[in-house]
Image (tube, rainbow, N blue to C red; front, side, top):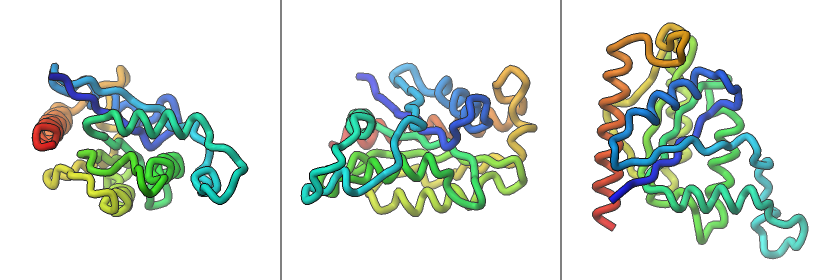
Amino acid sequence: MTYTVSVLVGSLRAQSYARKIAKNAVAMFPEDFTANIVEIGQLPLYNFDYDDPQVPEPTLPEEYTQFRETIKASDGILFVTSENNRTIPACLKNAIDIGSKPNHDVAWKNRPCGVISHSVGRMGGYSSQKNLRLALSYFDMPTVGQPEVFLGKSPELIGEDGTFAVASTEEFVRDYITRFADLVRTHRSAR
């Protein structure tokens, strides 16, 4: 049996620390998992008119449909995000909104999730993670309660080659990914 995890990165920058952290995390999943970064930068801004049956125009973008189907086909979702102005980056909030509709077929519903946040400062994306968890709580997404992963001073944690430069950080994230993988397995077997 294999499990599929979609990884959403809360940064569009190709060389962002969030993307580097996500790539490290993807490599840490057990052999029975396939984890892939799902790109969210191409998603048009969310507009409820796309999902409102009372509004014939505009038509639902194909990017919405593809994204929603990818999320629904996932056994779990891992969010790796930076913090922008003490909240969720706009690209990630947009993806969450797109997956939250239509109301009768929410893509996020009951998908186990993990959250890793970071910041270049000491707080490790605390505000972003708390805001993200608040948004996700609406969708009954089981999550690993502890530990929470706040990676502060992220430029010091990532080496020039893009991998973790601090062994204790790598071990901490690896442990979190192991716990998250266990949650995904348990949740799928209970369905």
